[in-house]
Image 1 (cartoon, rainbow, N blue to C red):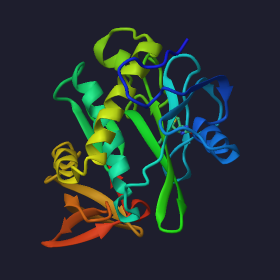
Image 2 (cartoon, rainbow, N blue to C red):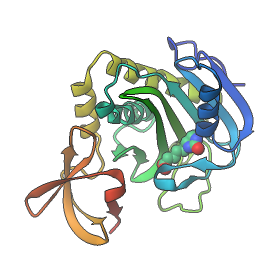
Image 3 (cartoon, protein in one colour):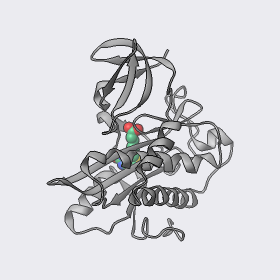
Length: 254
Ligand code: BTN
């Protein structure tokens, strides 16, 4: 069974486990609409049957092998214009967690895919509930490939077990990830956005390298430089830098 993490202050202290559900993000949203939910509540399942990903994609996972969970946060202190820092918090936490096992091989593909040796090991879906001009609730959904060894797209997906050759105890690993998320979230709560941003940029996949991208149907060679103040990706093309939102640019593999 999943245990309440011993080393966190509030994340995971309220843990909701269901053996199966369509999506932990959806369930977390339902729970938080029904009644006030505690900051740091975690909703976790062993079998997610209709997992949702970014850009309307699905998140497929073999039941019982991987991690699928959502963390409910109440980031009332965070200006709406700084929402992107939640992506940074979650991405850096997963990177911190992975660095113990696979140092040197972990990158963050903007906005928040976690790659090991250029293959995706984890995806994050953040869904915010906004009231007026404040962020009332943020649901941070994490799908992490832990013990799965077969993927329909082996060229692009991997798992921790595939990278290290070990098998992992899901209950222990989720506790560790929650500790890293809390630690990065507390860094945000202390207002250390500069520190978070510079660590995120230092881990950014394809940064300062020339690669192919597609935007509005046009293929172009560009160089990722950094992010703008709302978290859009700044890409240089022929000496000019332009910002792109999540739906405005696609990474193209050569
Ligand atoms: C992506 O890479 O597109 C994001 C995938 C996010 C998947 C997780 S699994 C737990 C949570 N519940 C969902 O339905 N999605 C997220």
